[in-house]
Figure 1: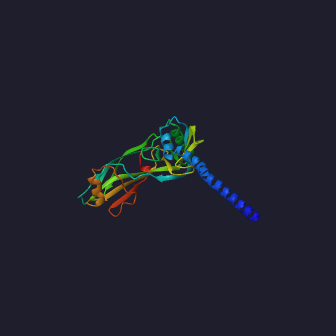
Figure 2: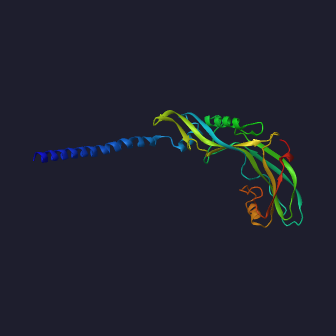
Length: 266
């Protein structure tokens, strides 16, 4: 009997320990949940980019951090002259084209994103541009446009429309934004967009030739009349639209590159 009593006492003691452990478990879970909930107040990547773009007074600083770059990256394909019509003709025709285009530094982050030159971020873009401005490649670091305009007589093929196309050469610098806030949020002041070490923010610095004109690819494009390609251009009222790149127009399109050495200095 004494042995049985001791055994029962031990069992009773163990069961109390179990009950205490189970009672503490919800408290521990609550302690873990509290810091997770606090993180909800941290600046999100979209808030960081918005604050940087607006030069918010909440910021001590905002800067662009470069991660990688690519020189001689070609920009969008642009039509840079009026369309000349030689449809129905059985022979070629000499036509005078007025060509004009301009380039400027652009930021690829999200729709409508801008950063004034006198803002913290705008100044950062300028400083990063200085890093990539070399004796071999001269780039446009600020948001001022650099242009090219000239007249040139060229040949439009029989039963074709003709116009000039342009694609600017740019130095593509990619990286991320680093914002430092005046007041800490959840114990920290530094936040990133889209993430630290990311390379999805692109800044395109146009490259400039020694004569002061934009560097890039310039070509005369002839398109056979009556084809879907020509109809698309003519039916749009000759307004600007997306165009295929050099040599990518298909069998109804002929491209002839024009050396930039033949373009008059501005």
